[in-house]
Image (cartoon, rainbow, N blue to C red; front, side):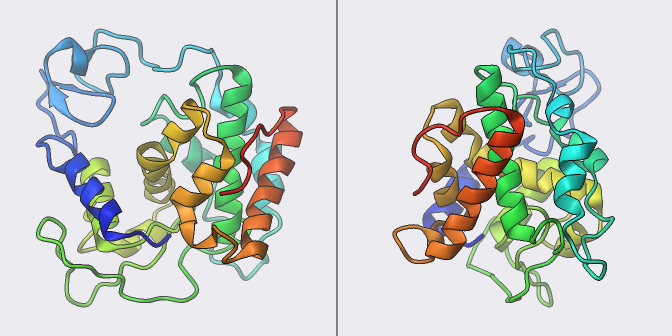
Length: 264
């Protein structure tokens, strides 16, 4: 995923508030969005840790992500990766389910069909970005460093795509690391070496930059623009068609209509 300076600024604004990484004291709540505090906004619905008073899940539709992402579904994608793939055996359903525990709104907002569409979309992009869970690192590696006071690049490190959604750029590694408690700037390659962190980083990106397009009904096309806008506007028709194909296929497996606005 390649992101503009505008997106970088947005990331910086999202994470500049203290407490984002949620290393809160035992008597302080870690909110649904990863901030420390003691008011109902922090300790109420979606509270991750501390003296929480609200529901442990933010979605109200009763959907359990694990019931949709079954072993059969996940393995149906993973088995298409060749035996020599770095992702073979690295990407696991267990790691994915561990990651979504940090973001209870993932796949649980709106109707049951909305949940199925969001999950289908997430795995459509994962399939495209990783070649059916084959790649843990981007094929065409580069440094991907942009000027940032908050997330300065570390000499000798490269911030090319890694993980299920191929998270890219120093500002994404820095922000994800702060939110998920790993050193994304000094050790970006942990995203390609630790299965749990790998999926957590992907879900972190999804919830910050893609999830809203599904909860607001913008359709799959909006998610393509957020994940890899370089495929939009007729620039990479084959890649775009592949994403749409995976999405509609997974929607079919889940027994749900894919909805409108399939292309960006």
